[in-house]
Length: 391
Ligand code: ADP
Ligand code: MG
Image 1: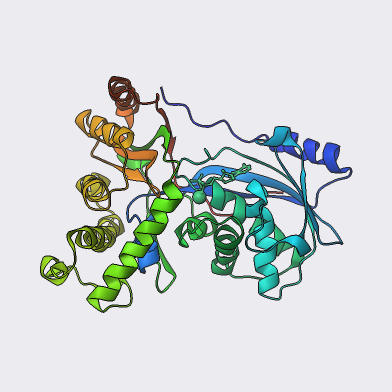
Image 2: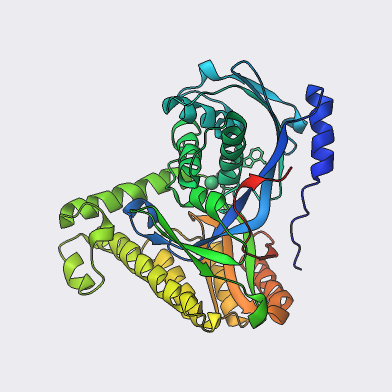
């Protein structure tokens, strides 16, 4: 039932590079996907998020060129054939397909007046794509890390993440906050990151489950909402409107104490949207406090469940398939479970006893079948390291 994605074969990827482009690469870089433990849609409201970087990652074999051309091949798409893009042609509004996440980094670097030469790249990933696990950030941040190292940009990690976000926002046209990229760049094995998205500060917290015989199960619903981008934009707008009506810069500025009273003047829709953001950001702080004192990780379970209910009932970003998986996981004995990622499908995470992983995955599969939803797949997540050079 539990099937961890197979590792990327780095040797085969290097061989593929030489086959496609002749000669040897300059190096090999990798950047991970991420799972957000709690704090959803809080990042663009200046609130808190709490992701871990995954051990699943995108691996990029790269060589610097002397012109401004990028050739990039992904073994996952177009039968691994390279796409060629001149950086002079890259601008917002262009259509570069999946290569936007790569060439967009070059565009973002040029915006900052960094010296930018072209690259030859072959990449492969074992981060499931479009599942809310940030395969996109693994791609954009892996590229940014490699480009920075090859051009000696000497950037802080936060700036690498910024390049990735700009590529996603402006060239790929995906209006994400900064969480995905920060998690992919700044992750550490065995640790979670509490990110204050307004101050852009990261507090690393212990998140090593093996000692406590727990596992973090990631259950992929294999459902994705085709209008997710439009819904995302609507949520962002609603949050902005709520903040304006409340007279604050961002929903981050709304205190948890007396929340119902503070939100009372809003329409019922905006009240629900704002309540999700304020309470989920507060739940991040509660989970962080529990992890910080090194206590029993099981205690975060109820907060995961509350977060799911808030996403389902107040923010309206879950989907029947993920609701069914979340409920099945909890009914089968998970300490807590919630959808992770932007929503409308994607994955559910569940905190479970290590020896219960299979049973809970089976319960989820049974629930999905009963509901007429696609068969889910599951893997066990562990906190991994952020973007870096492998060779
Ligand atoms: P998520 O980041 O949750 O996986 P997104 O929709 O943000 O979902 O990003 C998925 C997109 O990122 C894919 O549709 C594709 O354009 C691009 N992408 C991610 N990984 C790869 C890869 N290994 N090869 C080519 N494109 C990729
Ligand atoms: Mg993404």
